Length: 171
Image (cartoon, rainbow, N blue to C red; front, side, top):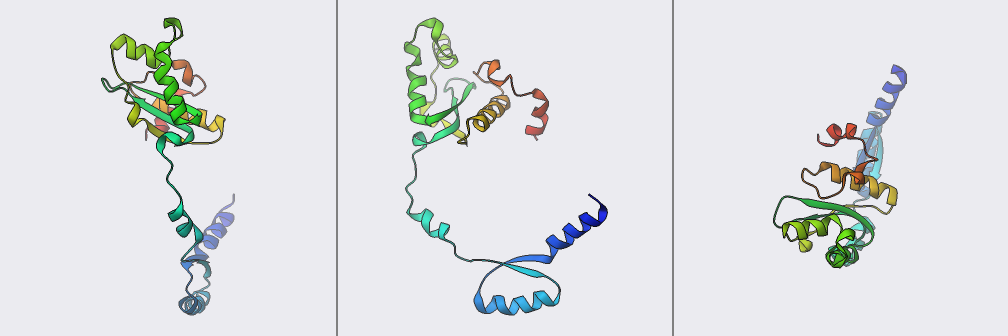
């Protein structure tokens, strides 16, 4: 981009002013702005989102789906980061019941629980991110795993995410 193009974009952005719309005040203000070569862009004071969201029911945390979540251990600083497209409640039940599997089929959470006689903080599971797309959710999961200092996840969970990005994430 040339210097002239950059200056044009800056002037264009600076010449537009966004203001709330009020019939009598906006029309008076409009004349003043145009006199100084500013183009007013009006924004409605009230919009439907303000009224519609009031009537919506809140979804319980464990009813959310398409999330990246974190389960802390109650007895140490380790945590597990996972993702699921299903309801969080369904995935947490699977984690809780995993200890019933044969020893060779246990998850990292169950191994931690059994080997250390620790309990996971199921009730305070945190939703770290919400994302419909599996690909984006997987990337988010990898980032959140990498950001943990003491994590139960296997390292192959983050093989596709290079450590070169870590300094950028930790800023």
